[in-house]
Image (tube, rainbow, N blue to C red; front, side, top):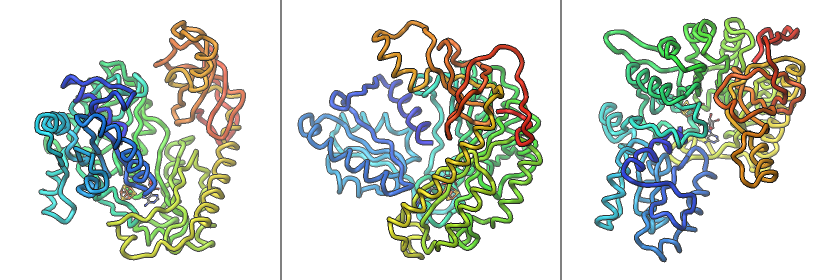
Amino acid sequence: MNMLDSELVVAALRKSGYELTDNPKEADTVLFNTCSVREHAEHKIYSSLGRLKYAKNNNPSKVIGVMGCMAQKDQELIFERAPHVDLIVGTGQLAEIPRLVSEIRDNREPQMAVSLGRKEGSRDEVSGSFQSYDPLRDPEMRTSPFQAFVRIMIGCDKFCTYCVVPSTRGPEQSRKPSEILQEVRVLADQGVREITFLGQTVNSYKHTEDGRLHRLSDLIAMCHEVEGIDRIKFVTSYPKDMTDDLLQAIRDFPKACRYLHVPAQHGDDDVLAKMKRGYTIAEYREMMHRINETIPGCAVSSDFIVGFCGETEEAHQKSLDIIREFRFKNSFIFKYSERPGTKAHSLYPDDIPEEIKKRRNNEMLDLQNAISAEDNAEFIGTTVEVLTEGISKWGRKAAEEVDPEPGQPLATQLTGRTDCDRIVVFDGNPRLAGSLTKVRVHDCTPTTLIGDIVTGEIQHGSSSMLPILG
Ligand code: SAH
Ligand code: SF4
C-alpha cells in the first residue's frame, strides 16, 4: 500500500515539475512515507529525520515532510520531536502534497493536513476526511513496468485489537468498479501484464454501482476481459470473508492467480479471540478445506504475530502446529509490538519478554523455512510458467562486476514468479522481461526455485500434492 502511495505522490510531484534524485543532500524536498504497524518502523523514521537536521541548517529552504500512517497517528508530535519538519500529511490527504509543498516554499510556514480520528465525527464525516487517491500513475515509479498495484479499497473496519491501521487509514471504503476498470485499462495500455488489487481486507470489497452489488469476484471477471492483462492477484485477504464466489472466480478465470495471502495471525483460539480476529482455528481450517477443494494446487501464505499479550508456551506451540498442518507457501512472522491507541494497549499488558518473543519468532521462522524448502523441492524436475520480471539482484550485481558499462543484452540471471507466487530464477536474455516463460526447475532454496528456460509444452508433475504446477 505504501509503495503505491509513493508512486502516486511522485507522479503528482513530477507533474508539478519536480524530478527525483537519489541524493538527499541535493534534494530541495525530502518526503518520508511512513508505516506505524510496528514501533521499530517509527523509530527508523525519527532517526532518519534526526540525520537531516544539519542538512536543513545548511539549507533552510529545504522542505522536509512526513507522510502516511505515522503522520496521521502522531500529527503535531512530529513537529515537537523534529522541529525542522515542515510538512505532515496523513494517508487521506496525499493529493494535497504538491499544493502544500509550494505553499511552504512561498510562505515558509509549516503545514499539516490529516484526517479526522475515528471518534471525531460521524462515520460519513470521518470517511469523507480520508480521500481515496489514485488519479495519476507513473510507470517510472514502479519496480517493474509489467506489474502494477491497483487499490480497490481504503481503510479497515476490523479493529483487530493489536492494530493501528483502522485509525491510520480510516473507515473501510470500496472504490467504484467502473473507476477500477478504467484504471486497469490505462495500466494495460502502458504495458502492464500483471495487476495486484490492494486492500487491507481486499476480499471484503463491496460496492453498489448502477443498482448492482459488485464483489471482488465481479472485479476479477471485469478485469479478466482487459486485453494485455495476463495475471490478476490480490492482497490481503481476511479469513472470514473468503466466500465461495471468490474461490470459484479464481478457479474459473485463468488470469486469476492461484495464490492467496490469508493471514491466520495465531494458532490458538483464546489468542485469536483476544486479538478479535473473528474466527476460530476450526473455521480457518474449514476455509482452507474449501480453498483446496475448489482450487487444487492453490498456494496460501500467512502472517503471524508471536508474543502477543499473555501468549503461553502451549498457545505458541499451537501456532507452530498450524504451520505444520497448513504448510503455508511462506509466512511473515512478527514479534508483537504494542501500539498506543489500540484496544490491546489499553486492555492487556505487553508481558512477553523480548528474549522469549525472539526465540518464538525464530522457532516459527525455522519451521516455516523447512516446510517451504520441502514444498519447493517437490518442483524439482517439473516445468513452471513464469512471468519474467527482469534481471535478478544477483544478475544485476554480476553484470556490474563483469560489464562496467551494462546495456548489452547478455544472458544473465533473470527473475519472475509463477502463477502461485513462487519466485523463480533462471539464466536468459533480459529482453524476456514482461513475457511468460517456461522454466524447468533443477534446484531450490526455501524461497526460490532455480531452473533453465525450456521450449515446448508445460509438463505436469507426478506428485499427487501438485496436480497443477505453479
Ligand atoms: N490488513 C492486513 C495487514 C495488516 S498489517 C491484514 O489484516 O492481514 C500487516 C501485518 O502486520 C499483520 O497481518 C500482522 O501480522 C502484523 N501486525 C499488525 N499489527 C501488529 C503489531 N502491533 N505488532 C506486530 N505485528 C503486527
Ligand atoms: Fe489491522 Fe486487522 Fe484491519 Fe488487518 S484486518 S488491517 S490486522 S485491523
